[in-house]
Image (cartoon, rainbow, N blue to C red):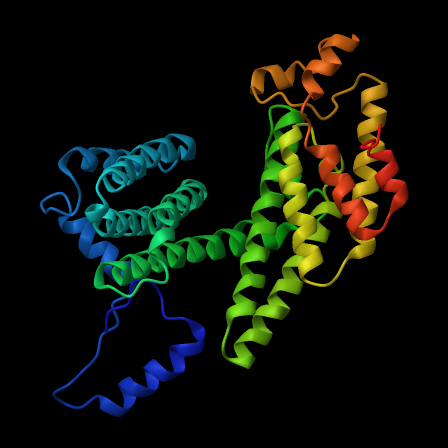
Length: 355
């Protein structure tokens, strides 16, 4: 019995029941999941036509450099981009490219899991999902054979992304969110800037995981499974709140684009139906600390993206520099938006949106 990934919990009992009822002395069943398929593919993909010849060395490099996540992710991105470009140029290649992306992602995941370092797999899963959606989005709602194949291939990519997220969130983040500075100290930074950047990144990942869980609850058919997902979503929302309260670095973003992580975290808490008081308290803390840092010419939220420049920020206190590094900010409009939604006029006024 062959499955592209792992059997979902809600159908596991049915599969095992079928195997038990139909096994005989002459008929036996073996489960081939994503790991089994990945192992078989790894043994033969360099000798077969699974990937274009020029793409095989790139996948090999991505696998070899899993201990260096950024390098591994860089090579995988080259591979995924090449497969995407082929499909973008020829619609007839969409299905093939999607299947190749799905297989390559699972191979990377299998190796990364065995290696004990899921960072490259997580980043690669996000990138693959974006590419896959771009290729598949216009095929949903169609009933021809190719369209259905593309839809199935996209679901395979989505399923692998979900499994990688499960492994990463459950193994690397959730065990530490209730410990004071538990994740901050795990960063092992060369500067406080590293803690800030990594903590907001982890916050965004945890919140996104919660949003996916909430979405799955809205489309689940079985009531029992739906209820499990609702409870899981609330658990993730509580984990988001614990992560924030136990890691003070999350009280003051340094990069303006960290507003995206803040938005995701607030949205997760809002959609799970809990934490309005926690949301207001956090937003108020961010505004107060940002204003204090700005007035004291300490590291305040800025639109700088270059790491070296961020380390040097703020290197001047004149008005021209301040305007340059805060122009086009999305942080304060984001806070003002949620303040308005939550009905908190004080936070809204502090955001300065009406100034």
